[in-house]
Image 1 (tube, one colour):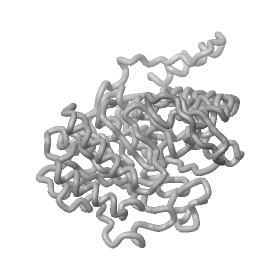
Image 2: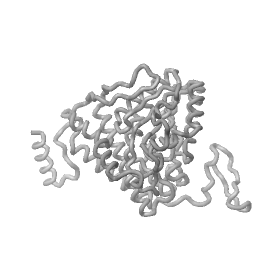
Image 3: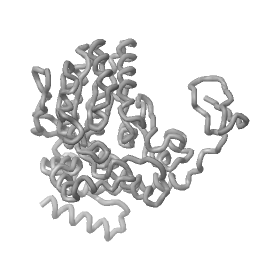
Image 4: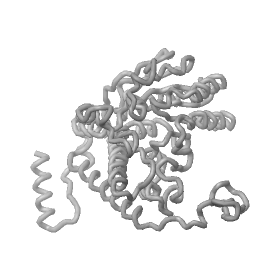
Length: 390
């Protein structure tokens, strides 16, 4: 019946030349919130696990959907611009792993801190960056989030410390941010993200040790997307139980393709840290659809069938969409309207990113220091002098 009414109203709207789609369903027609059963986390050195019965409101679901869809479309547009040689250099795409970024953000506060590796576009967006700023940074333009000087791997926002190009090096930095949180006593924490490839780095274990000794409010998260560059985890690690790698640090292994699983696990870990119990280690089991970087086609070490199987069975956006539709939390038309709006936002951002001017040479050395008097910086030879302004 509702479908018939909706069809009649839309037909009337089209006959009247209405510019926007008219929806026959009001907010009162939808379920305001629903309870979902999620996969239980594997635990290490913990007496209890995050909840498996969780509540999601309609408003939360729509927000998660829009954010994940924005990240997905942004990465697909970046892929297109890279192939057109408009984006150059290193570029690591995040499509397939959207539930990790969105779930983590839903489990902490914007006043908390986050640092990650070079697959950073999604986190730049969830931490408060705009699509326009991110796309312009990818194309090296003045309106980019790092003034066009950072590129794909070096983006920053408030309480977000990048985007780091050296494998694993962000983890000790994140431990340092967590130390600052404890020192200041501000009830904040730091999330440090790294991949399964970086998980074997010695500096990560050093960070675990210090964080455990000093009971730092640190959440160490391994985004296990199964492949470190082109090497499967089974060929790279004697133990693939990354959530147990902290030994004396409690750990969780989480379904990283389910935004609700990631959200609940992150909330659990955040409560642990804020209560003064020290760090927590999480392993998010996820998957990237693209290759390691744009120079990697991604099919020489895995089959196309494997990628399609993950897309068909575990896609984070499809999973959330199915939950919302099956629980009457949204209509197909409403989600399509979000998709259309997201596509327009991405296209507008891409237009800006290809027309905004590049930063001039005289701004090359600006912002080396924060709040510092202007100073001269040596150029490509001792006689070439550039000025650095904070």
